[in-house]
Length: 167
Image 1 (cartoon, rainbow, N blue to C red):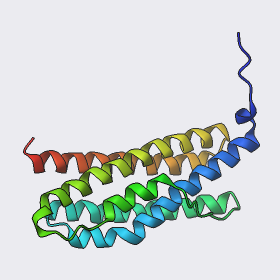
Image 2 (image 1 turned 30 degrees about the vertical axis):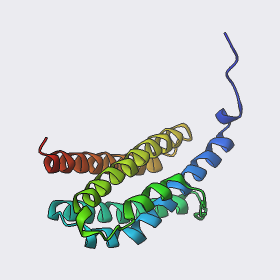
Image 3 (image 1 turned 90 degrees about the vertical axis):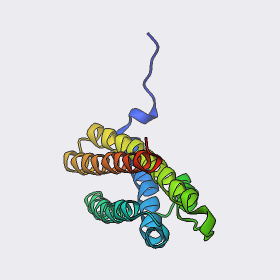
């Protein structure tokens, strides 16, 4: 059997990985928190506005949880300038301001918010796994809560898109 031991199994490396990925998702959440209000004002679909407002509350809750995690780990968040999630969020938050494209704008928002939630789901799953490996029980539970919220938000945006399309 092949020897699979490598540096990633080292708890110090795992902690560094945890903090690195926590920084990536935290940075994306900050960006979303700062830009989502513009999107809420521009969408024409009331149910989508309500879903985005719910998402805003979830983002604030998740940021508060991550702030607690940084305190538990005795570290500070670091901005990740190349975080791909920022590009997805930016695409979702770009307002086209073309009244002829209302349907495209609303669908664009729904699609991009689902993309954001898929990235969040994957990220929280990995962070939860790393927290488990590091025996960070309280942090693991916080990641479970963030994961559950992102999964629920994803389902909500999918349901709205289905209704919007008459599916």
